[in-house]
Length: 254
Image (cartoon, rainbow, N blue to C red; front, top):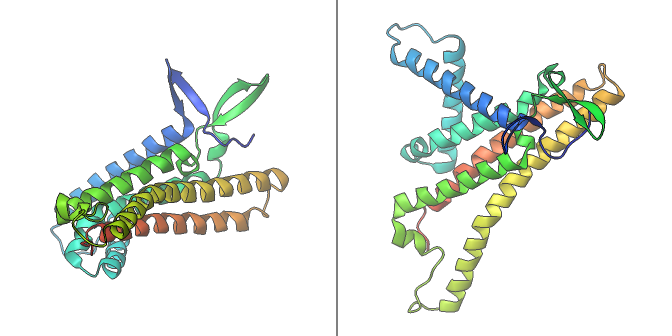
């Protein structure tokens, strides 16, 4: 198995290529949607006083912990509830994307294709967090959503004061310079978000591949646990930074 910076194509439909990371994105998204529908129905139709069990119980514990964590950042329960659906979805999607590659044996399932005259295995399973296209897309959505949250909370005029200063307001040049820095920082968030997640997960993927090639038994286990921890931390960082940016966007500029 070769290490590839770009995702591998599994099948093509004309000019459209379905890569293994696109496949995993669809699978994880479907898994989240189906699980949400099941848990939502169980919670809605729960008539007894018995404690929830199984998936229902796990989902309640995870979501309650995330909501409490959101409260510690926003300091406002109503605001936390407003931001929570998107932030919780980000966390669950990213952590599943980070951990999918650690399931034993999944990297050996795929299709064989010819590359440079050699027959190579193209695995169906590859972490979509190791695809810069996916991390860039989710970073763009997060930053755009922050702008939408800010406009909806403050109104377009008040929110625009973060970036544009009235010529009648002194000191105009200082305010304009600060506004330009704010615009640059919004684009910097996209770069920071996407490359941080991509770099950490891709590096872990390379490390595990190399270790499994060199010593396939026992020795790679500590690295597997390390990647579990890194995957959790990266998902938490992505979600919490998104929440912080939402909070900052809804604060009126001074």
